[in-house]
Image (cartoon, rainbow, N blue to C red; front, side, top):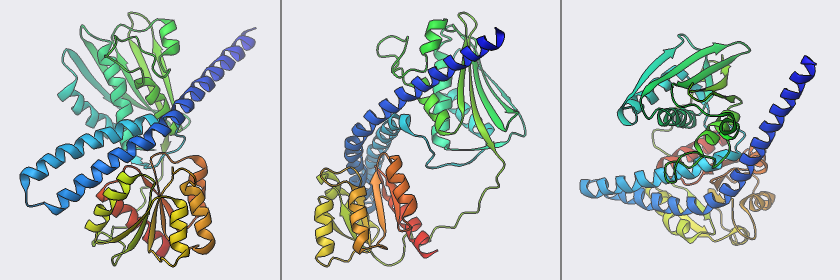
Length: 382
């Protein structure tokens, strides 16, 4: 009977996790559509802002105002990215991370912004195995857990951040509070998107759902334990890595792939076609635009010979992926950057197989363009 009971508990837990994953994927798909339009708007703002900054470096008053606009657009970009993270199953910017260093960085930010009547206690194991992860998303996940913990202690208490090395090659980062705790029915729904017990205007109900999605994308898990009056324990468990950091090729000091390029920019959004050329011209390149995949293919068939194509993925009629497949018939080695705010599995696999194409995450700025141009040409020359 004990074994049957355990098996039933395991079945129920796995079924709950499956339902949770399906909910997050549905929300991620919905967010992906919204992200496309928002990224175009934010991308245009960012492109024009950075172009003006590059052209008016000698005007400190103007560049200061432009910095404010750029920071606002960056926050908007991060918000959109956090929504699309629900459907992610992989990591785009993984690096070898020291979780202890990340905890110290985020705790300093907490001390300056959130902690008032709450005591912060760090209990960090040294040395701690490294993890492969995205610094920004793991930092946001930790901050979400800490903010929830602080909110659960309106009368004060202790917030404990703890790291430990676990068996089976895992590293655990836990966040414990001495707050109000959660009853069983609330705990069961705590990681559901948009579920919140906070008053209107005080919470979105996305914090724990985002942490769960981040843990899943990193190949880890999120475990919550809580009882009314006993506080809450959140345990973020991630796979440890013992790989040595790989030496990175130093970027070209000239900031580009070489001589000025002739770039074909393909995007159905007029905001992008009128704003991004300025960024490319700042980098010394020449730009021709096309409003869709069919128009771009006509230009190529008519004799246009660009050095690079920047191709939007989400376009009506013919998507970027469809355009890329047809483009490859006559131009198998033409460098292509597929621009998208949400890289779906099929598109990612196509790029993986194509030795002359790569992803350019939307919205992109001057440094993103410079970095991706360097990367794709270094890859082709290798």
